[in-house]
Length: 107
Length: 117
Image (cartoon, rainbow over all chains, first blue to last red; front, side, top):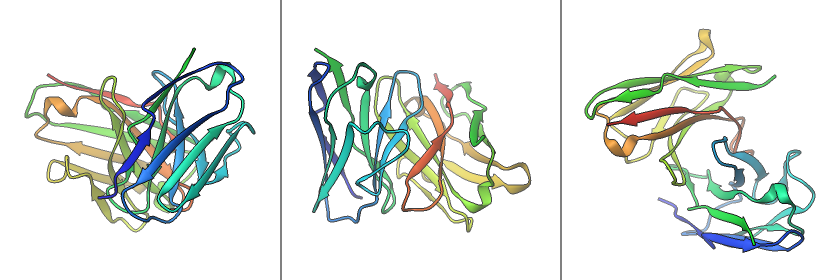
C-alpha cells in the first residue's frame, strides 16, 4: 500500500500568513494526488487535482507543487475562511490513501 | 445540479448488518467511478471501497470480505452492504464521484452516520 505521510498535523497561523502543508508518498507515484479542505460536519471539498491543478472552487491564494514523492499545498495569504482541516489523497493505486490531515487553526 | 445523497445509516449492534445507499442526480453513475469514504468521530478520512464504470470493485483491507459495493444503474444508485459490523466501523460515511483517475473525487455527498454499539 502507498502511505501518504502528511505534515504538520496541526498548524497555528494568523490571517495574512503564508502556510505550507506537505505530503510524502512512500513510493514514487504519478501525479494522481488531490488536496481537500474539510470543515467540521461537512463533506471534503476538492481544491487541487493532478497534484498541481487548481479547481474552480479554490481561491487563487492556493497553489500546489510536486517533486518526486513530495507533494505540497501552499496558501499564500490566509483568509478567515481558510481555517479548516486539509487532506491529501493518492488515487493512483488501491487502496486509495489519505494523509492524516492538517488542522489549520487561528493563532 | 450534480448531487449525491447518502442514506441508510443508523444504530446497529456489533455483528449486525446495514446497507447504505448513495443516489446520484445530474450525472450517470455508470460512466463514473464511485467511492465510499468514511470518517470515524474526530478522526481523518479513510477510503473504503470503489466501483468502476466497468463494474469492477476494490476494498480497503479493513473491510474486505465484510463490505460489498454494488450499483443499480436504473436507479442511479450505489450501495454499500456492510456486514459483521464492528465498533471501529462507526463513523460518517460519504460517497464520492470520480469522473476519471486524472481528476480525483470531485463531488461528495453530505454523508450518513453509522453507529455500531
